[in-house]
Image (cartoon, rainbow, N blue to C red; front, side, top):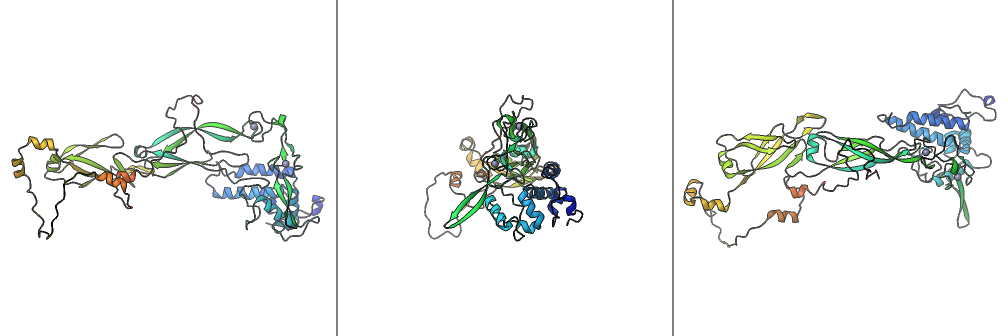
Length: 457
Ligand SMILES: [Zn+2]
Ligand SMILES: [Zn+2]
């Protein structure tokens, strides 16, 4: 985009700019006054603010950055002059000098002071730091781990949370000023927003720009009596609000729920997002594997031999699940059956469900029971005992019979690739609850009656 309409007569003293891209970005003519440029930037900033209106438009964020960069240049009289004289080339060095000052030097200093450089193309450095404007692309996101149970992922849940965040003051609209009071140019930097410091490296002295600490690099400062009463000139207030976080049926462990723009605000910067990261806690009877569920069921020896027809489990939604075994079927230890369509709801298709796998554990009768039966008769009824191993090993040692607890042994060692059903293994994950937020269960509780005990970091 090159400028072609304007001639120097119309602008008076300003000569014809070599290029006008930055003016075009802000939608102002190259002879716009400082006030017009500021106004245009504010207007455009609202339009291209990536949150919430343009949340689904990745180009909006890019546009917003370009615009901020254009404003950063054109709002500084010296930088604007260089740009008008030599275009972007002038700003990145190598252009003609101005008023005895070498532009390349000037920008080298600027970058030094702002912590930029490093091959970053001019005008798109928003790394923060001590730059004159401290503009950021977007407020920081707040990540909040949230512990969920398998029941919650099965049934879905809406969390109602009280939160406190930093919001742009509504009374002064983020200016920090009372009424129409205007900030005065900072006395510490004569309104430039920066001051120079001299540093000597041996015999060599360099001059660098640093952000003015008196005005935080803005070049303006409000007098005590002109400050907004509500935010005391801070531009930011603490705001309490309620957020609903919807845990949808079938969501996964580690899934992120994004509340766009719900994070802390800062004047001139789109608010960051609040991101809930689900962390599944282990369930006492069910385990999840994708859309499938797995559980153990204990049946008696009688049931293993003669079958059953009963409610085997209580599901995650409280339903009892009745199962009848086929007649004549003996169930052996660790046998598994599948209940089709009784697994987890599929995310975004909650009417579709995975499968539920049941693995049987057979409960043997105890020693007391054995005392009550005729052992000889019983022995004659059940399959015979095993004989010694054939062929008999040449050497045989005798070992003592001592009871042990294999669970205790497993807790001592966790080799990789553990059995899925090993609870001790599963509980290594997702147990920690770092949730800083208080869940507000009572929807009708008067807000403010309960202080939110939490806020994004
Ligand atoms: Zn205020
Ligand atoms: Zn200052």
